[in-house]
Structures are given as structure tokens and as C-alpha cells.
Length: 246
Ligand code: ATP
Ligand code: MG
Image (cartoon, rainbow, N blue to C red; front, side):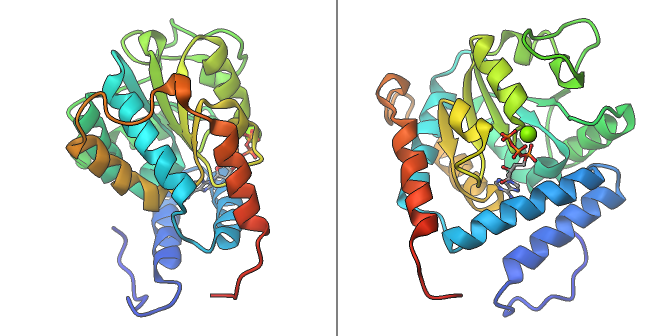
């Protein structure tokens, strides 16, 4: 956690602390500069949501916990923003679900991959898989196609917070069940994943980890009965509904 002089009473405390974490992520080589821009886009959508976890997100969190618990080979894909914001909760979710953690970033950089791995290990991860240069998923051309043979390559369920649409589509075409966390209900990622949690990563990940820790396997909506489109429509409606400014 970066040192901060933002008082906890500040009305935008959580948002400001999260920005500090992302900036600290850039400083320690975990997050790319482009990640700052992606975070800003997320913040804009969160503002429209009233910066709260809505019932449609709570339903998706429960569905995601159930899908991860039911998976044979769940994997959590970690990029620089997710790691900087929530390394501890990513590790907790992995432990609660038996999922493997695998580093996967858009802008090629072995140094940054190693920095993400180091931060996850520091946060308590037992093992962090790195993308190989020998195994790749199909339907994608750039760096993000490379995967670990015991991780994403063999995964049946992949959780990809803050994902890029191309890779999300490729994962689905490779037969994976994809869970994403994305504040933008209009993004290709949100529309392509089977389960989309439209919520801020920093709010929903602790809840997801709690649910995965305490729920019994087999509880929650089966993926075959899950209506992701309904979640996206409700999220869009919530964003378009006027409310008093916070
Ligand atoms: P797509 O290719 O899926 O259409 P994109 O190119 O619009 O996505 P990217 O820049 O690749 O988006 O990824 C950033 C995404 O992550 C954005 O949709 C943004 O809303 C979302 N995002 C950023 N910060 C957060 C956060 N803290 N919690 C959840 N989502 C976030
Ligand atoms: Mg994109």
C-alpha cells in the first residue's frame, strides 16, 4: 500500500487511494503508462454507476464464484492494473477457488511480467505461472497469445479482470468459459465474456473472494441458465438513470 496523506474522511477517499496504487504500480514497474489511461476510462463508468456495487453486479459475483468453484482447471489471468490495485485479493480468490494465477499483459515486457509475478508472490501467492514462448492459444496474433501449458492453455474457466476485447474473444473461441470484471458494459470484453461483473475491481474482488471462500460448491446459478445480456442491459440502464451527484 503506498504511503498516503489522503484523509479517510475525504469523500473520494477510495478513488484517490486506488489512483495512488496504480501510480505506485507504474513506479515499481508493474503497470504500464497505458494502464493509467485504461483506469481513467473505468473511473468514468464508475462515476455513472454512483461508485457502488449494484444488484446486477452482486448476481454476477455469485455466478462467478459458483463457476470458479465448479471449474476443473480455473485460472486467474493477471495484468498490471489488476495486480497494482488488488494483488492481495487476487491471491485470496485463487486460494479460495483452487485457481492458478497466470501473468498476461498486452504491452510486451519480460521485466514487467516479472514485476507482476514478484508482487503476487509478495502478496502470498504460492505459485505464479508465466506466459511461455512455446504454447499459444489460437485466434490472436499479438503477445497475449502466449500462455502457460499448465495454466490458461488447459483451463476450462478463465477469470480475466480488465480485459481487452480481442483476447476475450480469442479465449471464448478457444472453448474457455470467461469471467470478466469490466466497468464498461459496452466494451467488446463485457459483451463477449459469459459472465461479466460490471463493477469496480477494487469493490467486487473482496466480495468475490469472500463468496468463493464461504459458499458451498454447486450453489449459485448454473452457467447454462445465466443471462449475461440482462446484466449488461441493467448496467446500462443504471448508468443512464439520473441521480443526485455524490
Ligand atoms: P474492449 O477491447 O473490450 O472494447 P477497451 O479497449 O475499451 O475494451 P481496454 O482499454 O482494453 O478497454 O481495458 C480497460 C477496460 O477496463 C475498460 O473497459 C475499463 O472500463 C475497464 N476498467 C478500468 N479500470 C477498471 C476497474 N478499476 N474496475 C473494473 N473495470 C475497469
Ligand atoms: Mg481493447
